Length: 118
Image (cartoon, rainbow, N blue to C red; front, side, top):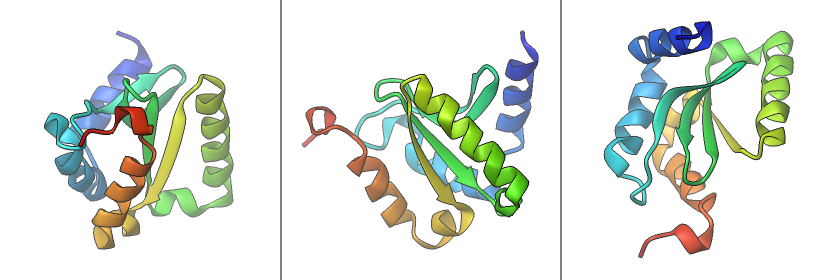
């Protein structure tokens, strides 16, 4: 097991409240029948949530992501994920806490029409 895999396992055990709330909506193929994974390692990074069918990564940004240093790091991660063919959606903790329906709508909107279920 790599260090990235070990760290991902630790993150799954120590989810933030926002991650727990979103996971409750994504787990067990509840959203459009799509399979999502939590804290999925992609060396050298770890995605908060990942849907392999769509190559979709969902990131949840808490207060630690507001500093210039963290924003630069997040931009670097986004560039890397995009270079690997992933789509990246980012949400703040506040969006998760206060407007879950809008978050879920944005995720569904990112699903290509050919993959959306009736």
